[in-house]
Image (cartoon, rainbow, N blue to C red; front, side, top):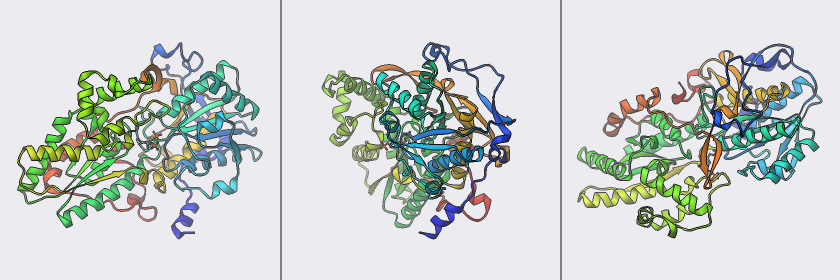
Length: 517
Ligand code: FBP
């Protein structure tokens, strides 16, 4: 075993001491009024009324628990620590407690594919990246048969609780399952854990989804290296697409960490022409300074924010959901579609996932921009050298070692999920406030998922879903970025954060994301 792997396995996550004494704490409902859209009340009659809960001192129940869990959606560093946190907590409550892992995501629950998870194998994945202990999947639980299969499996396995470790779509699944179980008098409680490197599962109470910190640190290291290489070789303009399905949080975080020459933030809503002109201007001006190189960050979700591309994607989604083709597009969208390079056309038509999302990670936006910028420079009779290199950083950041922050955060989330189930909370998401502070200041609560939901069009129909948190253009991190980006364009203030650190000075090992501070 690699010595680093050995060292990481031995790392003890730092969490609020309260969470280590499950018998001395309880989740208690908060007194404040419930929040959330009242038009969802009829869809969630049982869970809509529920208020959030906070962890306070009290006598916790000591009876053994049987908990099932699954990972859902894309990998995010720290997932295994959620499992470790659940396991350790239920063992601290009673050594007769049992943990069941459903295999390959929600499909494992529907198809009754599961196995007991035991201490020994959990010890082997503590502080490790990936979801390989039980796998993950993107199946949406939506048909009446799927709901009734889930209920039957939870009843047969006599589960006290089910933990859904997932992002916005997966926790939408958690909310609908919780409601269905309550309506049908199934005793299994459903608790969610906020996972996604995209960082878009956020609210006033959910300061961050797990995995974002580790993924951004991995990408920032790579961007920093490329920037240094660009400045040394002085011959390439690097177009780097960064994962993060819709929101541009990852790009913003990495931009603040590395100071690229340009970082596009989808939420600014620029049209394609303006984006291409901005890049061409950058290249021309830098050429004037003798700098025929550069680094440009592109968020994976950019296309969905470009007004004309968004209209095209929305119409395509509707047509594909009805089994129709691009030939039925309205004229304006059709003209745009056929004006795109054929590779991009094919990528726009790729199969949607079971939640109706377009496969943005597969669309080569970086290549599209390179092509359009080449054309634009041609129109401007640009005389300099433009040698673009395209990169996509995505999967490399999803299963890396979790940072100390994610290792700690995930272990704490796992402890909370187990306690939430013991205290019979359902349809709630684990949330920790004050994450940027020392662990003893962390405040642990459960947020009703329905509070985070709204109606959106999916696969051509209005569906209740958790609203994705986009980059707030009024927020401190964005304003910091906006204030500095002009000088980053031309002054090459590249930062090189280097590899994520686990040992040594706390100010290097235990940093939290810039966009969370
Ligand atoms: P989740 O929202 O499920 O966490 O997934 C995030 C993500 O990594 C996105 O950033 C990306 O667009 C997508 O998954 C890629 O999905 P896939 O693994 O199916 O290619």
